Image (cartoon, rainbow, N blue to C red; front, side):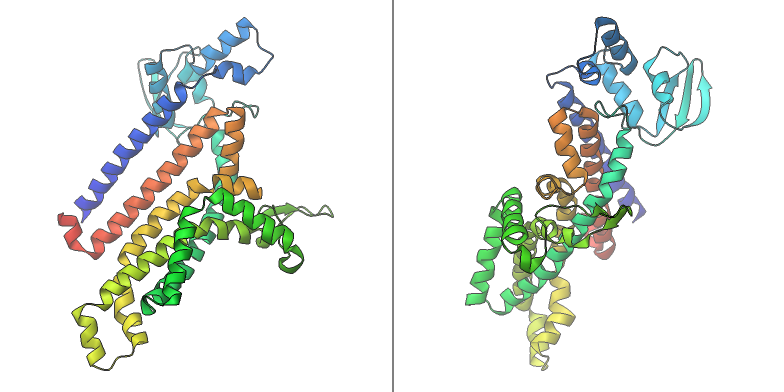
Length: 358
């Protein structure tokens, strides 16, 4: 089992390394000069050269890539030369010095995501730390809705196969998968937040935290979570319901179910004690993948509902070409996706030894 876990972790690191490489190369070939973005309209030639040297923009692409890996790696190497890029970056974070070889210090630190181009040098890690919890809350609420309603609808659909209810649920699932999230967000915000506002008491836009009108600071407004969570959960709900239906129908046709029926067990007990538990394996796989995807898919939903999360931050960063925030956000989301997949693979390997041998 340990060798299986280490194998999955190793493959996860390889995947993460590929993601880091793709992110760096993708954003390095974009048009625009990062140094000019940082100086805005105030630059002159001397300032421009100083910024390029300070941040390593005057180096070759391969050397910039090495610098980027050095910033992200927990084990980093820093020059003792005050004019070197790595020396300058060492001043940006706390690190534990391990040893020195010639003119280079080897240190341990948290991954450094660099600083924003547009926010007076604010750390990208701080920006992500302030917005990611809101996105995580939204994603957890959305996947919870998808799990509960999806499994219930899947069970109802399986028990009422080829009836009006089954076909209605299938139509709903198809619509849920085909309608883009940004269109659903606009429709839900307009209908439930504007047209039916006096009945629902919901707002078209709003974040988790709002400022008190009487100056008593921030307070949590849970009702603002309802609409974006439903919109974000529609697509995984459709997937979960159809997977539950298909898996449950397959289980209900197996011999052990027929044996349970012959012993006089009710349909409710058969589903509760036997069929549903065995039918949930593909559903768990889908849920794990969708949860990680919701973190990335919340971009437009957060922007439309004005939800102050990581997705909305990514949109603002794209509008202002704040590349460090975009790169850092994509990297954090990819890392979470990889960790969740590793965790699910390990759980499967523990539950079913046949997976480890394959």
